[in-house]
Image (cartoon, rainbow, N blue to C red; front, side):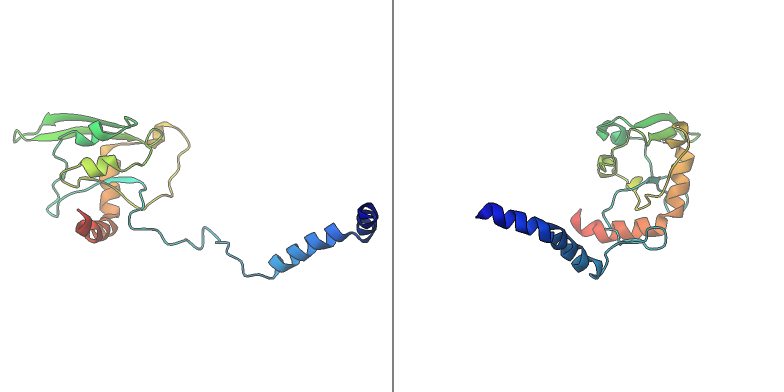
Length: 162
C-alpha cells in the first residue's frame, strides 16, 4: 500500500512542489545582504585590524624600544632594531611588521607599556607582492597619524578595562 502512495506521489511531483514552496517563502522575505563597497557593517571598538605606531601630542614617538612587542608576538612577525639617538636615549631604527606572518592576536598591543603599537579598525588593504606587505616604521607611523582620532576614541573607551 505504501509503495502505491509513493508511486502516486511521484506522479504528482510532491517533492518538487514542496521545494518550490520553500523557495517561494524565502523569495519574498526581507533580505539581509549588505552591498559591501557602498554599505559597511558596524565594527566593534575591539576589532583588530591594521597596526599603527603612535606619537605623543608633541610629535615624539611613543615607542621606548623595550622590544616587549617583539617578544610577545607568537608568529615572530615583528622585527625591531634599536640604537641610541643623539641624546643617548634608546630609540628604534627599524620597526617592521610582516603582515603575511601576523595573526592579528593583539599580544603586541597588550604588551606595550606606552601604547605605542595599536591595532586600528582598518582592514581594507592589499598588495600585489609579498614585499609590499612588510610594513616599515614610517608606514606604521603614517597609519597612526591617519587613524589617531579613532585610536584615541577606542583607547579612551577601553580605559575602564585596564
